[in-house]
Image (cartoon, rainbow, N blue to C red):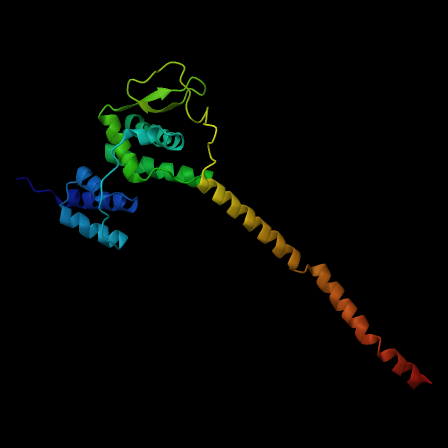
Length: 223
């Protein structure tokens, strides 16, 4: 049995740390890395400060077909495909770098990241298994995630033709209401806080009021 070199073992550890920091589950680590399960559990506890979560991984490709997840999945997989096919990255490097770029894009655009790393990894697995394909939109010519063997002609992506209730979820409504309440609080605070001009006026009026009682006394002394 061939033993791994120290450099290869260190690289595996660094890859495991990068995946754990991005939110990878134990099933992802076991599939992508050659480290023992005990070492990966110890790494997970050291990085996250907690034991790895248990439970099943996503198993349905239909989740990626709904409106918002489809847009996010299409964004990530286009980035992953470019890094792997054009930039020459390995599968694991394209996965981690593509997911970081996806998170950065979400932060810059102010959108919530819908895909976690496990969903992104499962998406790549579905493509490798031949369950999904990239279909070109007839309007924007961009490629989006679709079921294998779906229609390829005159198909419109979810970004060009969103559903009627797109963005009208309970979560979006609660966020909008919270923003409105915050704006009202800011306006009320601005109205309550006195400005510099108001402060100067108050000081001047106080000085005038302090001088007024002294005038009769001065007149009496002069007399």
